[in-house]
Amino acid sequence: MASVKASDLRLKTADELNDRLAVLKKEQFNLRFQKATGQLENTARQGAVRTEIAQILTVLKEKAAASA
Image 1 (cartoon, helix red, strand yellow):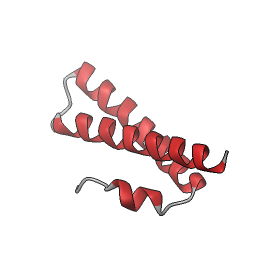
Image 2 (spheres, rainbow, N blue to C red; image 1 turned 120 degrees about the vertical axis):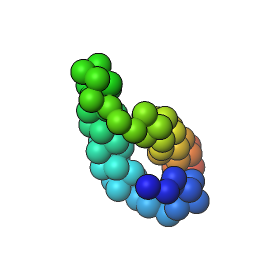
Image 3 (cartoon, rainbow, N blue to C red; image 1 turned 135 degrees about the horizontal axis):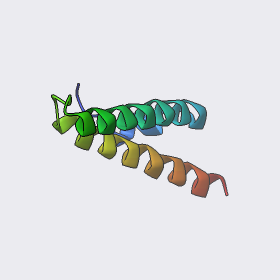
Image 4 (cartoon, one colour; image 1 turned 60 degrees about the horizontal axis):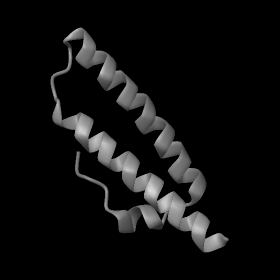
């Protein structure tokens, strides 16, 4: 899966970003669970999910600051 660009995230609404954030948080939990049980195959996915979560949070904060 290709990484998401911040410019693409900025085009989405806050609701879409929050929905994507919820999906990523669930995936992050599942990846941590798989790692703890020794079932995780793609360890690089953990970093990619963490990075995408950070990007979404950054864009959400930018949108909040712009509307204030």
